[in-house]
Length: 69
Image 1 (cartoon, rainbow, N blue to C red):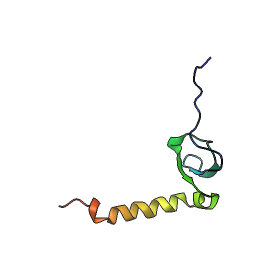
Image 2 (cartoon, rainbow, N blue to C red):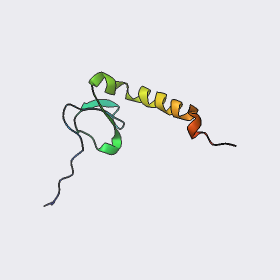
Image 3 (cartoon, helix red, strand yellow):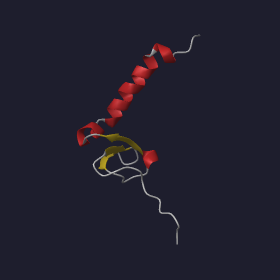
């Protein structure tokens, strides 16, 4: 018998995008390492990959993060 049960972190009412399954989930369904979020709505979570791409591009172009050659 296990002393501690492993549960995914999160709360119902929070929305996540599961990287492993490519789906939107409400609450803690998959492990935290496989999720993006939490998001405030299902719609917001459904655009998680697009949001991540946009943020990555903005960070790549941010002069504070560019190394001088």
